[in-house]
Amino acid sequence: MKTMPSVFLGHGSPMLALDNNDITHTLGALGQRIIRDYGRPKAILMVSAHWYKNRNLVQRADQPEQIYDMFGFPRALYEVKYPVRGCAELSDAVLDIKELGAVVDNTWGIDHGTWTPLVHVFPDADIPVVQLSVNGVITPRLCYEIGQLLAPLRQRGYLIMGSGNVVHNLRRVNWDSQQGSPEAVAFNHYITEAVERRDDETVIDYVRHPDARYAAPTADHFLPLLYVLGSNSGHHVTTFNNHLELDSMAMTGYMIEE
Image (cartoon, rainbow, N blue to C red; front, side, top):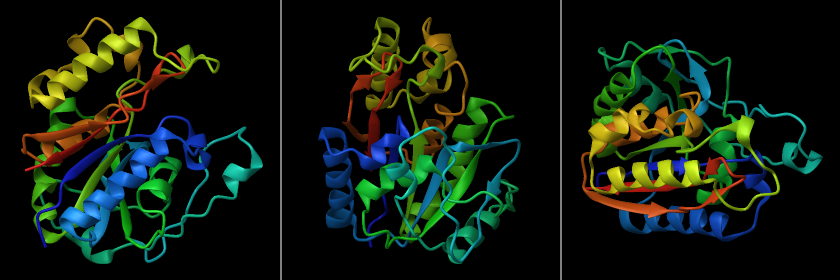
């Protein structure tokens, strides 16, 4: 089995799970490409923006609960099922990274940052998933360095994924907009150019951009990208779903290959 790539997914609104459009078709093609070029991953280690905690936590459950951590959406969204298994071998591999100091926490589950995109990427739910928390009390650089600690897992057939958004500002969302505001477009372009040329320092120091406060007023949705960048030093970057909507949401994703 080849060394797995690393992937950052823009998940946006939870309604993504029910969508049938260019965004979701691209996610489906992404999963097919990974399996075609690398083989079926043994399991996915997912860093979801919605498990934002004050330490490094990892799940270790045979059948992690799918949780519906969103409110006020149509009933059909709460009927979407993504019954993935866990992977104790992957959980233990994360726990064995002494510098990480992760501990087991099974009180959360597979949240919508994970299952809303994965229902399109791997629709059969036949690849085990383990979530790793976003550590919200450490610096962006340390998040990147955690990704570096996780990198060897890719050689063992595990797919490292992050789910969040390059631009995510719920206070400025315009539900009638199918495009990005000037500030969102500028920030998304700045980060995407940096990712594509593997200028990781620029991404780590994203707060220096004049529109950073607008694009990422909280760090939760941006930091998963740093885990992904740290996990793979490859220079072959494929940008997908480079689309902005709702004024202040970017669906942009990246796959990094060696």
